[in-house]
Length: 402
Image (cartoon, rainbow, N blue to C red; front, side):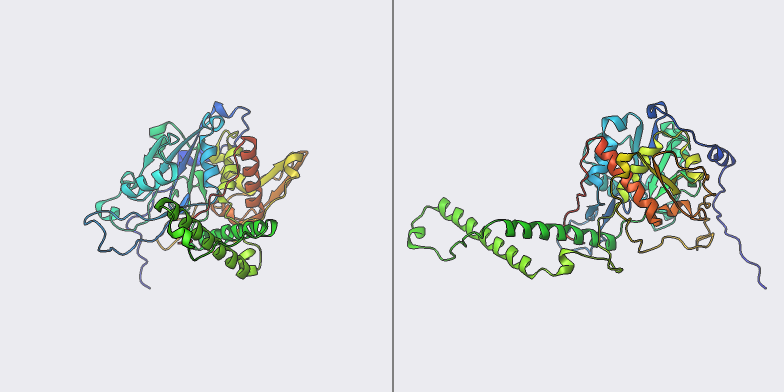
């Protein structure tokens, strides 16, 4: 039997220091400002969906870099308001760290955050320590959190990396809040939900108000004598009336699936609620003394909803997970180990007034979002956190599917 070849560039092991810190239990802090937290945000696939590269056209400026269309993930407007809220900024530092090239990162940051000062730093592909060859081709990249810790004064006890790639933080797995990638398929479903809402609203308006008399299409002799401004005004009115007729025709022809879209299992489609769940996690971990310790002890998979007010709110089921990101094997084709699986969560009983949602202990921490009860509970917490801060829960889905 031929001897198996070893990987010439094996990934470095998790440091003993990191293992020791992540083994320390987390304790509750009453004042979140006593220990600031750091949120490191990925962009494409995490906060936004970028359309594929388009073929160059004759109209493109020679040498110009083509920028791709950026679509926000649902509830990004509320998420941005949350991290920028004065009460949250007292305990949270936020930065962007993307593996995209600097010009793409600049474009996505501008379209996502505008010119606000919510970000402490913006890092791109040139900060990942890649060779020139690796920089210019698709390759598995690692975000070694030691770099931002040294730069911004944080540690395993204070940091969350929000990223859709399960292997991105294999050196510090218990600081990685991995989420499902926001892809074209999920984006299309979100647009279906938005379009159905618009159709239902228009139908309600149509049923609740008398039909307007249709504008005449052909001009009268008097119209021909009107001055140019009045003629343009009437032309706009006729155009508006034509659009209204088309809307009415579309409403009349709307199918049940357009008014109430469903998934492959005949369940009602809903907006992707990932960012609501992330807000729920952040609003809980702000009071934890050790993020890595909390994650490693199964914090994501042992969520409870507290208080009568919270219990009285209805929980919306989490989204259908259409594309599992990892297999059950311990390594990938690239040879990188998956983040270790979570140990059994503590079996302490729920506190008085709590409603506990437990998930199988053998589930991988970085696949927490596949456990729909836990995911729904975190999304529910996120909604409550926004309401407590006076932030509107706004999905912000706009535009065409692609």
